[in-house]
Length: 101
Image (cartoon, rainbow, N blue to C red; front, side):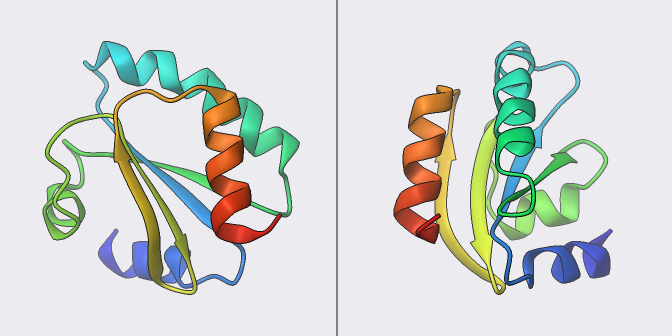
């Protein structure tokens, strides 16, 4: 996944990464919000889910200490990072702030 992850975040299209775990209840709350945003911003934003238990090397590389942790990348650069559940409105504002779309 490491090489694939690098190609995913090196996109000109902004990429919102959701670091989650199957056992995480807050992650289950965040998931439908991310699906809505992905649908509404199709072509302008890519949403990718990364299971921390199956991808510990990526989680460690980006110092994911709790789930859910969301990160926004563009052209390989980390633009924003947050741990915890956010509303659709909060996420939309963050995406607008960092990507101008």
